[in-house]
Image (cartoon, rainbow, N blue to C red):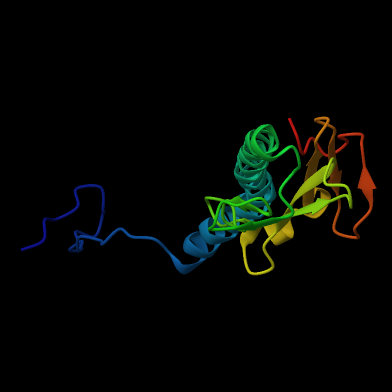
Length: 162
């Protein structure tokens, strides 16, 4: 039974009130969360792209190492990627370990120069990494990157290699 409110001059019965959130309070909270999410998401995506670029860098370093070992044995660089290890093939997959990049090599006609390239997979999340769609390294260790329009640069303006 509800208690009588002593401060009520008429002695009316006061019913206990249920406290909760009003619809307006709930909508304001949802709006604040949506705004904070909209602000935080691009920063989070940028950090994820930068972290997943390590997948490409490691794959290119592995190709460099395998190419140098291949050159020491055959006195020429391998011209393709595959599962076999012979005078023409480098024994590595055409995909990075994390699956974020497609790998390829381009070799000069005399097989004394090469460029290894990692291109962001079209189906992966790295396709949104506009400044660093492709990373490449050659036999001399020169590092390059290309944006989503395919413009190559030696300057690392998007910090693709760092």
